[in-house]
Image (cartoon, rainbow, N blue to C red):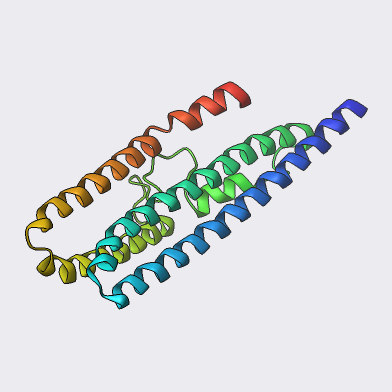
Length: 193
């Protein structure tokens, strides 16, 4: 009995840590969005060729950084789900329901997604929120390119090729990583069982 109590206490402590991690990375996510938005707007207002040329790269970095933070939130959710399952076995089914509520409210943690966009549930608010920011970022990058390209002369095509290559590499990797979810599956099999 004492051993079971120690397990429950340890699981509760781990669950608390995972929920704190979720909160911390949600906070970092939004601070990052606002930080990059301020940088992009500053570059657009500065209106020099160099500042305008930076905007598409800042936009790509903002998207990749957002996915990085989401990756940590997903890790915390995955681990919290496992801990809740352990605790529910010990304390009684339905004692802890946070993971199930998160799946229903935000997005199913096991669903393939690209960043926060879930192709199987494109009308969910989380998918809409992700699309909103993607369209905003793309609009700001397009504005910068529209203002920059007339000033680039012969450098315009190589610059666009570089932006397209960098965007394609980032998007391709993120789509591959999030849709396949191999890492999350490996962690779950290896450590959670």
